[in-house]
Image (cartoon, rainbow, N blue to C red; front, side, top):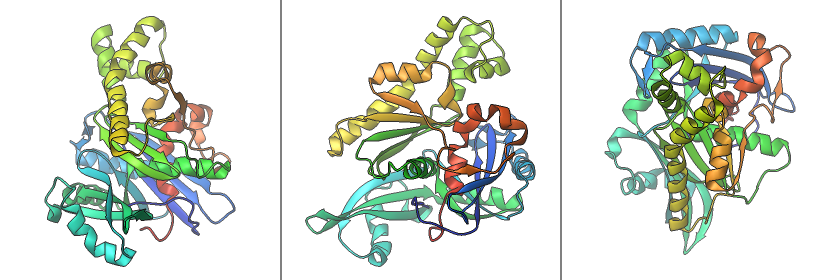
Length: 360
């Protein structure tokens, strides 16, 4: 379930990111010196297809996957996809030092103490983060996801005619993409505490990392749809116009009014970031986040970056997932002119397509 960056593989990987409003397909060729994005597809789902992360119209989503793969021109059958939400638990734990093989068995007993679900109802995975944490113990990243959620997601892909070779976690796909850009730029292994904040339509993934290791990961039920709902209600505009404003098309709307509504919508997002920092402090892992990197479709919400920077008093940037990879000429087709604007929402898909061999 967890993918680690920088382990080279041959051939290509297809990342399939099924969001609440958009399906994204990315194929990356790993055979050259740098990963190369060779195929790309984007398909917008009807609003009633997925609501608040729950699939309401399965046939619409299955058809959307097929159309997106066709748009991308992907011929491969195998894909890597990801899940997120409250049915996914990510926790850093300390356990007795042992080999990875022995930990494979012991992790089930360890998980019972940390996972708020029946252990028989979850899929488990783990990664040893620190082999020597002192006192003959080691630090382990534990990942648990409810089986029904994983199976529902995998069966959806199978019913669309494709094979899910791995189901990852959105937050780790974001980190995989982010680390590829840092590695490519010669900045890998930073000691800085960085918050990777991926804002989707209904869910925001927060992954706080240091030295390429996740320190704290959580999902919160806040996304770009929350901002659109506030604008729709307060400005008395239609659903489509509210989403256009959130996407940056203000038209003749008063920017001061829009900024205040975005500030209102950002409160829950800021609270999620603050609670993550509080957890880090309580665990003794870090006193503060030194930088926040935004990604996802909500990263480019007007004024949001400045509002968050003002609120938290730290550097905030918008991630460019294309920075660490090559792109085949003409791969974005009709979206070529707007690729700078839509690039942040490709972060999860690119992170999945960067997934390396040996972790499937």
